[in-house]
Image (cartoon, rainbow, N blue to C red):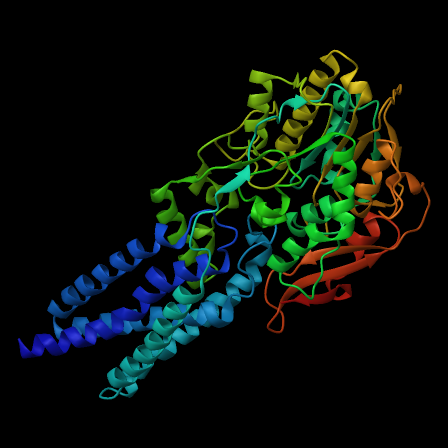
Length: 551
């Protein structure tokens, strides 16, 4: 019994670190770093993870201590090596954990990083295996001291995160789908805003599907449109408020401040004074895109008060996968990669969830159809859909796919959805289509290789024999002025509109690409400046981007 207690003590020390990393600290750090973005809260998972980890630690240590001493010692060395390398991986070797746009990692383009990472693991593991043969009597004390010290540090970190992590309560408000398929009888400004839909890919779709070009014959296609930011945040908030991101603020501070700027307030006051109802139809993680609902509920009409339904099984599985993703070497990371749409499915709003995926929106559009809300005069609505954002789960006919399709097929599906929406709009009585301003664009491209969004616009009362194409250097900076110009309002004070720019004009624009890792201890953007077209931007080297940090 005395010998068993000694062996149990050794087992408890060696098994504590991996339990803390993978079962407690890992999930907690994932949550703490994304607390404002997640809909679920700390109590939904932490105590289950803590209790399960405690049980595994005690039972695992007890079983390990029952084994013959040589086997126990060998397993303790294996556990120590795995724990230390996991700790080192998270602390020093994760040069790129995820794509900032939420799409899957380009693992094929990271083969060199993967090989280097694996070699480092093998070398360190070999060193840690050899040490016990060299220091036969002392290695156990050394390894126990190291793992004990690191475990103590992790425990302090856990306590600190528990004290400081917010939020501690569910957000009670979100936007609803109410009115998403309804238009006003008089004037409508309709923005079909796709979450990543870049012009080079969509041009390929139009080339093989002339029917989409025919459906857009009343539109002008701007093939040199700049999204300013290559990420939904801050692109969507920037478009809606007209306020450029301030790198002197944290993202949370800016998401509050931008809605309080005079320009933003004046824009929506103008729309409200003209009896425009303003609606934003975006998915549940709207806080991540535009900030707290409290900032916009006086502006946006479709804000609703509700609470989320939590899929606890999915929460536990996906949160643990994200924790494992932090610690394992690159060769194993693809097995534990979690798509952002899966995170979204963890917590759904009880009422009127906004259909964000292409196929979901298309299904509702086909089943319910567009209609006119006679209680309104005018309406400004932004309909935010998945577009070409990964994962590609849209069939070429616009319907939802349970399996991954392809970029080309998804692009065809997006084209079908646009066609159907426009056709239904044309079929509404009362000149709804003719009176409407319709903008079809995306909040961002996908990378510097595919940097620019699609941009189609039909101002009111425009009818053409065929779609017009221009390479005028426009930008999402022009969004508010463009909207005001289309509804016949003075746009002074809102910058330029897209109509102020013509083919052949030169304009210096900035493309902000979120850094996918911490640089010199700071998060930030790589800012690229160009004054011609997308091809110049695509040819700029990584070194030509200026890193701009934010708190």
